[in-house]
Length: 124
Image (cartoon, rainbow, N blue to C red; front, side, top):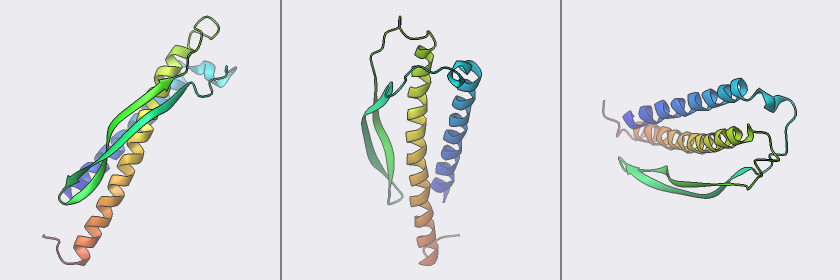
């Protein structure tokens, strides 16, 4: 149960970080709400390595490695703020992936807690 609480705390931290990133973009890159150059596939996931860690006999997913690929673009043909968009896209991709992993961790831990409570193995 302590590990479940820890995972839920980390999940909440990722959710807060996502909101902070969104707020940063809306405050510091307002130009994205008007004329937007084609940013399709500007940053994409090149490789993800998700492993597992065993905590109290439960295999939980963990992000081992994430490699992002930035599409080549001309700094002369794009607005100057596209560099900052690239940075924020990279941050958001990693946050979203970590968030998904922690949602799964909490789900696995919830099932484990319910199972241990129903089998009477839960110690109070």
